[in-house]
Image (tube, rainbow over all chains, first blue to last red; front, side, top):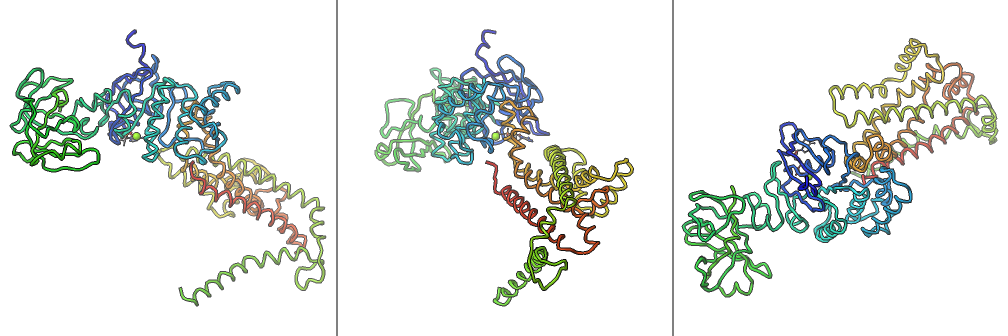
Length: 362
Length: 263
Ligand SMILES: Nc1ncnc2c1ncn2[C@@H]1O[C@H](COP(=O)(O)OP(=O)(O)O)[C@@H](O)[C@H]1O
Ligand SMILES: [Mg+2]
């Protein structure tokens, strides 16, 4: 049991159906204490359903949910030491901010002085002290979000669930709240289980991201893992912008996998599987991993290309570079706006570290 | 709209207003006439009729009786109607539409039919005509109104409010009383006042189901048969003012229903 010491939640092979729809399909994962885990995926992929099963609002059709070593699969929400920040915040409109925050403490049977102390502490922590006697309709969106957070943190849950809590905020505020939220998570040391369909949000805040697609986990890893070493085409395309390169595996060269891409040899690496010679594969190469050289470099792996279009984006320029004569053999790359002007006759050389061209499993 | 139709419209409008209020104004005026006979001309004014009403122990006790029936009816209707709405609203089951239609039927059945039916039923179950029978009769009539108003309000309550309460440790009963009930408050105030008015105002059911003790409308009816007197005008005026105040208050709280958006 030593290995499980820090596991706070085990979602044990859980399936949930709604009629014919399989909302969550044999999901199996563990969440460690103190982690900021984000569930990322397109709308309808089963994120909320998973969250709601952890909260006790849905019961799995198959599998178990183990919270801190106890099987809670069939426990109602009020018996679980888990709290949730709802997408619409769900603040009680007839209660003041203070009463909202105290609600969970009262139901836990805490004494009056203790409720007061803890409510003060949380309002203070979330910079809401001045709003204690206001009702939710007298607050801004960002303040409501903080009240919802304070209310959910008050009963000291083992796990905090957050279902797209920033969706209702405007873009500018959202960026600020992302940083705040991450900071709060660090300071409280709580385990956060965060749900979003916004890849940028996930990359900014998470210790670990679980990418979901059609009720299944596509890939799980750190933001860097997912961004630079996507395992599947879905992940590569869902997170950020990328070049997808399709071709046949020709063999290996110093640990790198060599792929024949429209007659040009490109070097890449596979991270969680081993493609064999002759396999038809797709690989992902991030725009910022492509190095552009205005002059022919010494590196033997640099490829010659021709700029077919450029888009000025302020500090950098995005270039579409065609390799060889094939119409669709195009790589998009970023280049310093200054360096981009040094390209003569649209001719340039590109290279990358083999490590950065991730061979996908599908 | 042409000038003419506009003028015509406003004439019709004012004619309607006059038609509504002149009889009421006449009734109120006659209550202050210093003479036994209702009609013009009025030579002297008095408040004696009001004094007489306030000193008339029969009128005062009947008033109290009607109030007691109205209050009991209201409480009962609110409890049953809310329970019905809370049960019928969220649950999905076969025959829900039929059950709902049946439950709403008493609101639209003509008073006289429902009164006779209730009378027969009361005799069948050996319920003596009297206060309890009137209360039950009024309640059957009022419950659908309460249920409809409460259901409309319930349907605007975000599901997440109840889930949040459950999440924070409330079982379903505590969640209902601490979160749903306060949310329903404006609907309950409005529906409650409406129930009071319906009950207080009812003649037919009270007539058929009542015992020897009359309710206020039944008493007024009995008094009318022995001739119109300004005392009746005074009673009616008092009732008019009270109900108008209640009605306006109810209207206001119902209006807040629509404005009071969830959060
Ligand atoms: N209560 C429900 N009844 C029927 N279908 C549902 C219900 N909740 C979710 N679903 C379906 O399950 C799938 C997953 O939904 P959800 O978990 O809400 O996705 P996400 O949060 O990732 O957008 C969707 O196809 C959705 O339509
Ligand atoms: Mg969702």
